[in-house]
Image (cartoon, rainbow, N blue to C red; front, top):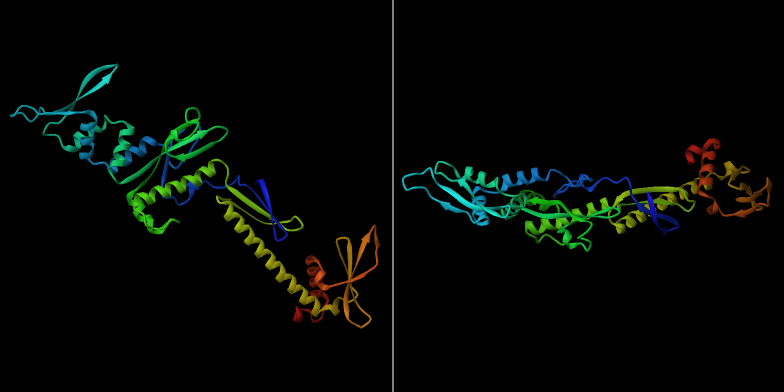
Length: 349
């Protein structure tokens, strides 16, 4: 974890950094499909842009839509054959090659089906024209995917012209899409924070934006993680894969709350055991850190605990302390000793 920030909470330290081991959000159960092609990066869900376009075109664009689009976009003219000849019908259109006009023809004899005519027209369409027809089908919503590359990369949905450095370091690398059938299947299971009053297209655009926001965070290397240190600098919890810092902080604080609660419960339990069995450790000396602890009776015959600091193998004078001042680790040692030596330890512990 590449740490960039620390916060204090209830005596513990929350260290926040970038998670270098997070999984790509495109491995999640996503709704949208990201189709990307780039010479240096493997991005998105699919990289075969042409193949995906062909599949969507085949699934959603009708023969009639192809013919109507072709006639309009190419200004194609239907030329009927002779009245008694059904084999000489065709569509005539003009294309410009090398600044010269050339007449082209699509066979439309009555023996040919609408599907066969549409197939010939499809061969004349560009990739962008096919994308236009896919969107016009009303069965798919799509948005272009653009990338800015300069000391790292960042992605967004929309035209590369929307970026201030569009002229130099930006490129269009593909598109995102959601099919209507997928949206209608998933809408009831994936409610938006804004509510549920959306048609499938509005819902799909919001889903795509949300998925791209997470994916962009991932490719920029800004997925977050945390680890938590106690007051002694010992790490007792860590977690990664965060795309929202507020959620990270909330989870880290909840972990600290749980840790301190468990620690307090264990402390109180061990303290009760020591109190109930203090006679079994009377006169016993325990060493913890640079201090020595012992259980003795005071002038009134009451058990008490005393502590003396050790310096260069020389003990200072013992002073009385409260049982509640005993460190947790020392309490655990005392409980373990009680279990071993006390005749009634098992019953009382």
